[in-house]
Image (cartoon, rainbow, N blue to C red; front, top):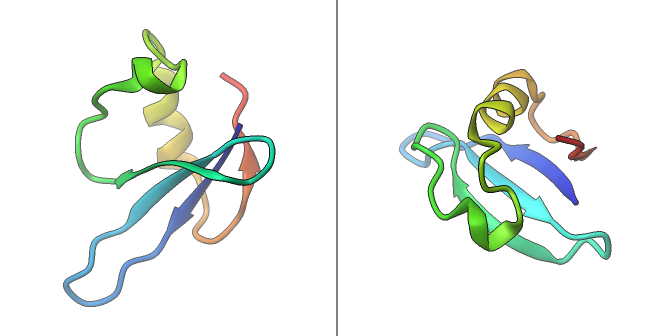
Length: 67
């Protein structure tokens, strides 16, 4: 699974994209909102680790998600 942080402009907020190994978009959510429904993506119980990864991400850099 891969993760990327997308920079918003003006009134559009920053977003996070989760992509599978074929780079198909599987989740798209606001970076400033609490993480919900992570069980749908196989990330249940990893909210704190994912929040730490999101905080350290650079905008526009695709990175493999290993948590």
